[in-house]
Length: 275
Image (cartoon, rainbow, N blue to C red; front, side, top):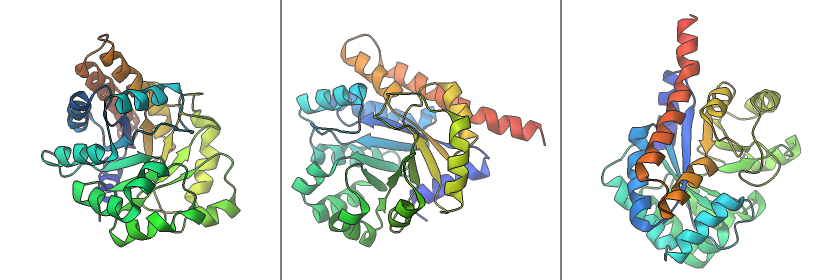
């Protein structure tokens, strides 16, 4: 079992969903981003998702676009993103790390080189937003050869015919985009998502992580009842953006993540009480 499998086994045993936290590599600056990443597991993050800065992030809303711009302006590169993971692994060998981004930087870096160096750095999975299954062999074949999970996206408009193309070769978990639109554009609705997630469960044994439109502890608590993992990105990145303006501290991010993690345990406690 890899780190992602191990983490989902752990949270299932605890009868709760996993918390996946997204931050952008190099935002608001390299040192602060490293400190934030290093502090996330103790705050309750089960899986850490690291954005690879890119100049044209078509699936991202303004909040994450600005984070990428701040990182690029600070000189953050893909190589430095991998170094960030490597530094994290000095202190933490158990928390899964997933890289999320777009294929252009990976293509320029070299697909095989990227996979080999990502695995050596301690990366457990990758989400490449703009790389469909039909075009992923250049990266996916190398990833699977080196046991790097290719985590794929499913949307509200994905039908069963499309699922039959997405699921083969997918690993780690399935990332369900809860809204039609970009990150931070709308709020996810647990009740509306339930039938769709139940249907997906009949099609795959992979854990289902719900992302996009999840901002508050209440959102996290509600969605943890219907999914295996909850992804929070824009809300955390907004707070990180305020650090660069001198309006917040790294400790504010950690406090925020702690509150989100605590919300995940509320449904678990409720189930235990009702037994």
